[in-house]
Image 1 (cartoon, rainbow, N blue to C red):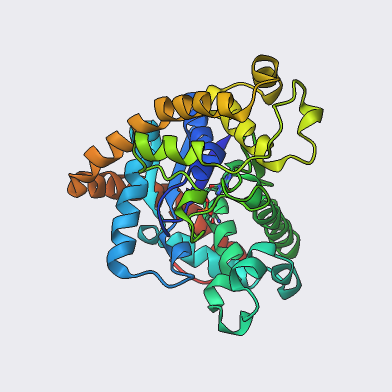
Image 2 (cartoon, rainbow, N blue to C red; image 1 turned 135 degrees about the vertical axis):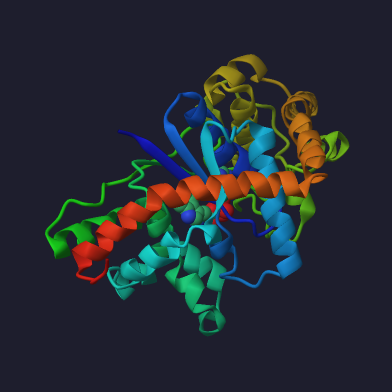
Length: 333
Ligand code: TYM
């Protein structure tokens, strides 16, 4: 039976990219009645330095974001990774299954490590094996993610296949990435060739889920564009990455397709389109930021949600880890 797992790093604030590429899909899958687990991957976050106080705050804020966006702890298991030790335990097994050559192909490591890869942490390098463990320790069948995580989910399949082959079993499933919607890759508002990211030094490049109505609106109005009017068909977006990005965002927020949006706004100037996009974004996002702020006033309540979720996640993961140990040949009770 289908089981969904996904996670987000508490390594900074949530962006519109996280929301449209991931959280919106998380909510859809929860609402469709599938079994869903959504994790705050704090162990992934520390692959680059995190100030402990900031990590605590970001963990709670991300959880508040999950709740404010519509995840319901009665229907989804919401928890933080470090509190379910089976993730780290299975990750060690997968460190011994994954090959160095596979890790060397990971584009995110190359991007994050930059030119001076010698200074990157060993954890940053091994990160995709931990991600595989996150998914497979629940035998998750579907993983909703943005475009940038596709390679990691494919590696998860490679790890599952090699484990199954090496041990002559079919224990781990072949997980499917679910990359859906109009905004699987939201781009920077300042540069249509760069992904919108919480680590971009320019705050104007992104919409944060904590931004208020004024900030959301002003960032959209100042978003970089070209000088031309909007086309009436998708083909007309060729070579216009900034225009395409704003249309993708509009379509995703309105839960429709870019083709349908263009049928309405084709021929308009950005001066006409941007205020519409700003209004839509404020209508959809400002209530979430307001609710996040409200939830953040009661951190104990957030911690209680995580604690209850961890207990349920532990109960699902423990037997799968135990069976894995048996398959590998580890002696135990
Ligand atoms: P992270 O924390 O970088 O991002 C969380 C989710 O948001 C998506 N996303 C975007 N989608 C569209 N446009 C963007 N600009 C954008 N930026 C981010 C990401 O694709 C992701 O779905 N390795 C993962 C976290 C992780 C995970 C997992 C995910 C750890 N274990 C197991 C799924 C399953 C990461 O760093 O995501």
